Length: 234
Ligand SMILES: Nc1ncnc2c1ncn2[C@@H]1O[C@H](COP(=O)(O)OP(=O)(O)OP(=O)(O)O)[C@@H](O)[C@H]1O
Ligand SMILES: [Mg+2]
Image 1 (cartoon, rainbow, N blue to C red):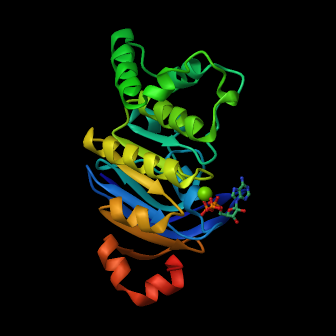
Image 2: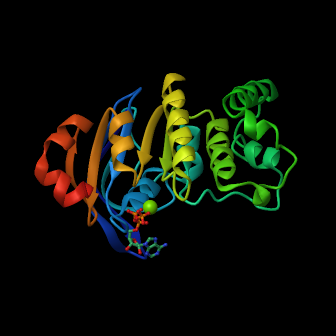
C-alpha cells in the first residue's frame, strides 16, 4: 500500500532524515520506533506532504506521491493524527472533530462517519459542546483520533498517541488502535511504548539518526539481542 524508499527529508534544505525505508501492507499495523529526534515525525510529515522530501521515493497504491501537497494526500486517503494533538483549544469538541471532514462535501457521508466515531468514543460524544482546551489529555487524544478518522482514511498515521497519558489510558489508546484496524483501516503508529507497540504491530521498523536500521515482526525484534539492547532500550 505504501512504500518509502531511501527517503531524505528535513527543514530549510537540511536533511534530518537521511535514508528512511519502510513498507506498509494494506490492513496492517506498522510500528515505527526510535529515540527522540531520530526523524520519525519528519519522515511521516514527508509522506503526508507537510514536509518536502529532499530525495527518495514515496509510493502509495502504485502512485508516486513524493512532493504532493498535504490536501492532495488527504484526498488519496492518508490522514495523520499529529504528535501533540494540535486541537483548536477555543473551539468545541464537535467543531474540532468536524474539521477532519473538511474535504467531504456529502452531508450523509459525514453524518454516517460521525456516528461511527461516536460509537467508538462514547466519552467524546458526551462532551461535544465543551471547548477542546478543557478536556483531559486522554480525551484530547481521543478527539484528535476522531478528527483523523473523519477524513475517511484508508491509511491512518498516529504520531505518539499515548504521549503523556497514564498507563491505564495508554492501554485504552492501544485498544482503539486495534479497533481501527478491525474497521479495515491500515495504521502506522509511532510510539515510545516499545513493548505494546511490538505486540499490536504486524511489522515494525527502528529508525535511528534518520535511517531505518532494522525491520521485522515484533517477535523477530524481541529475539534479536543486539536490536533489543542497542535500539529498544530493553
Ligand atoms: N520545524 C523544524 N525545523 C527545524 N528542525 C526541526 C523541525 N522539526 C524537527 N526538527 C529537527 O529534526 C530532527 C528530527 O525531529 P523529529 O521530530 O522528526 O524526530 P522524532 O523521531 O519524531 O522525535 P520524537 O520522538 O522526539 O518525536 C530533530 O533534530 C529536530 O530538532
Ligand atoms: Mg516525533
